[in-house]
Image (cartoon, rainbow, N blue to C red; front, side):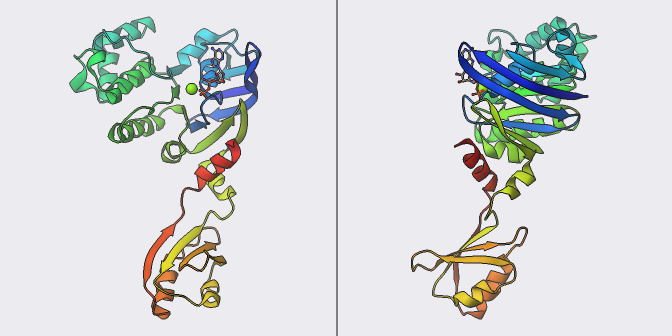
Length: 302
Ligand code: ADP
Ligand code: MG
């Protein structure tokens, strides 16, 4: 089972939304399609799910082509569209039963109950969709996408507009589904990818600008292992730069704040505490910079 995207381009009139896009998603992967607004994420997902055709190129899911085997593709793929357009007047259970019958699911009532259980909708199942909070509406959307037991889940901005608690709950649900399904989710938020995905495909203006494991992407940024420390007095710079693993020591204009870069994987914090004691100084603050994937994203999509 894999999703193969080959030389896909999409024109809306004269505007190129996708430009020669290539990637493969392997079975069991949880991939983040990351890019700023207008990058082409939703367009890519609509093409994989057979909602719109590409202007050029081919997509196959488990060997089936979106061009002439769309019935098979749709059977293999579950889709949560952007902004999750639901029928607000319908009851949760009624809506899921409706979708199950649309997909001609065997034993639809049983399957609906399973999906309600899986997505944590048990308490809300007798409510109208319009009465649910955004987080619970997303659960209905995910239950809908899962109803025909697809192998691949395509989730377009699944956590946008959620409050912080709902966000964590939906991420947890996606992580759990990722154990069984191949998942591609889109987002314009870096942290989302770091939290859920093993791999990130970064897209900008319709082109792929990076495609790698999240850890490799992180290590690609120079100076990613940076410590920022503030002392209550002036330390011996030479001694500071001789701590094992230290590459560079920078002092910001005569202040007592020091930026120390270290070799990859080296955690200087304990050594810095010992150094301060040795120098009879107090540490006022100490931070290790971690938002490095964010930096890759910013530099690639500027
Ligand atoms: P994303 O999901 O990354 O925000 P989209 O795939 O929605 O990006 O859009 C990519 C580009 O294509 C944008 O510039 C957008 O304005 C344009 N676009 C999307 N859908 C249409 C459409 N139906 N007609 C014309 N232009 C569109
Ligand atoms: Mg979009």
